Length: 192
Image (cartoon, rainbow, N blue to C red; front, side, top):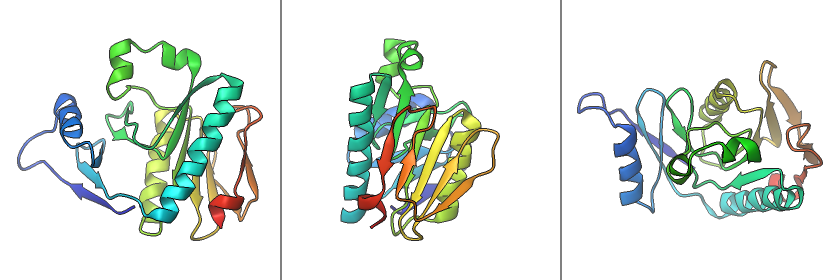
């Protein structure tokens, strides 16, 4: 999905509360906010990206429903990361004890927590370098496992803390490793 970044420096600062109210007042628009306070407007996805993203979220949600280890979030969920950025991964998961440690108020708004696991799915109009920077931001914010799925190049980039990015060429499946035990994502419907 195409993203547009607007710098607000000349007119002021978009506070956390103002950003939250902007999002609530415009529920049909997906916003993110960078650590520098820039407003990022995300265009809607096309049909193929929407189909693929739904498959990812369903598979992660079904695994989570069976394992009961945590909570699954869709692409509409915005997380406040430790660096101040507010980001919405295409799919995310948080371990139960970490989510339940948040106050009800924190869980209701944009949760001030980095997910344990995130997925970003590249659509045809996405800049790969922008998504890679977002994945690096997740990694430095405490995300323990991240997948950047790139159907255009038939690749998956795997992000883990303290490790170089692992690039897989046309994999058939991905493992949730120790973060998501027994979770295996088939990429048949995602990379095709």
